[in-house]
Image (tube, rainbow, N blue to C red; front, side, top):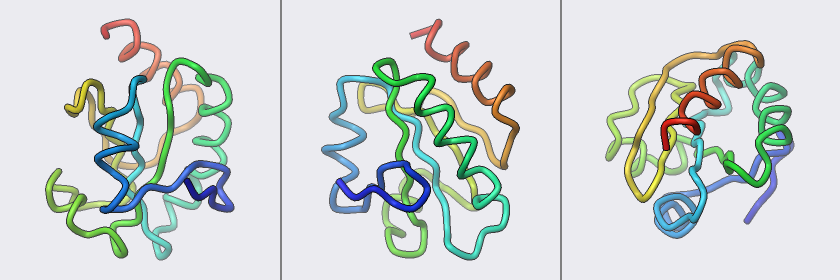
Length: 114
């Protein structure tokens, strides 16, 4: 597992199956890119939310430029795209950056339904 400057673990096409689809906890994947301004704005939000949800949900990022197969598999057309996976399946998806409080509320709602 590689930790990026964002403080969130990074997954790739090669590690996605094991780290996300095979995870015991729900996993929020941020589909991101280096050139994406809103992704940079979202970085500290994801770091804070990862700390708040530790033990209940994992948060990782996948670079859509270096891991295009996974992005294509889930029809990711914009960055950032956020998808929660649980039991190997996507269960929630949103496009675009959002404030910490809003993202945390959305993820708490997802966790309550799982």
